[in-house]
Image 1 (cartoon, rainbow, N blue to C red):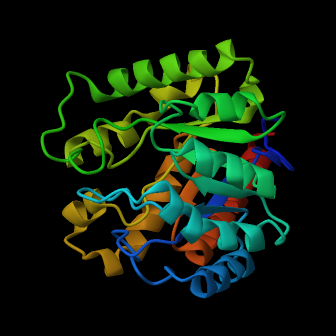
Image 2 (image 1 turned 60 degrees about the vertical axis):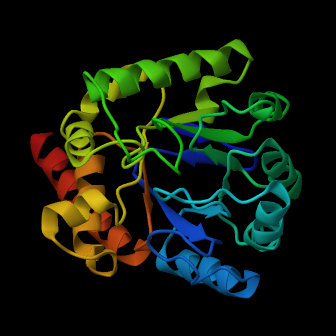
Length: 282
C-alpha cells in the first residue's frame, strides 16, 4: 500500500483521493472572486469537507494564463486566515504557493502539504521543505510562467519532456534528504501546454507511473475540456468528472477538483465496479 506522508497525516493511496480546490483569489479562471474574502473561503472549506473532500488545497495566487502574481504580503493576507481554520477540519490541508515565506508560514500553522506549480525552484523553497520533518509536497511541471505560458507552448515530445523535468526535480529533493514518501508529482495539465499536449499527457499518463512517486492530476474545468466539448467554464462539471475518472483509471492517486461531490460519487461507483471485477477474477 502506498502512503503519502504529510505533516500530520499518512494519506493512504490504495484508493483515489479527492483534493478540493479553494481559490482565495479575485481572478482564478473557474471561480475567481467567489471566495476572495476569508469568510467565503472558510465556508467553502466546510462545504467541500461535507461533500467528501479528503484533502483541501488552498491558494492565494491565481495561475490562470495571463494572471498577475500577487505580492507576498497580499498572498499571506489572503490565505492565512483560511489555512488557520482549515487545519481544524480533520483533513489534510495543502497550501498552493510558490513563495517560500508563504510555505513557511503555512507549515508553522500546521498545514500538511506544499503544492507548488513551480516545483520548489524559487530561491529558498527547497530549504523550507528540507527543514521540515514530514511535510508533504507536490511538484508540478509548468513551461514558462502563468503570465505567458500559453503564448507559444512547444515540445518535441511533451510526455518525455515532462517526465525528464519531474525526474530532475525528484532527484533534487531526494538529494536534500526529503524522503520519497513525502513527494507526489503533477504533470501540470494546462500549464504551458496546448490542447494536444494535454490530451497526450492523459492518453500516455501511464508512462509517468514509474518515476517513483504517486501522480496528482488536475483536469477540473480546464480550457482543454472546453475545447473538446464547446462548454464554457461554468458548464464543465460532467466532463471534469469524466477526466478525473480517466486519470484515475490511468494510475493517478489524487485528483484535484472543484466539483467534489460529483467526483466522489463517480469514484465510489468506479471502486465498486473494480472491486466486483477483482472478486470475479479471484
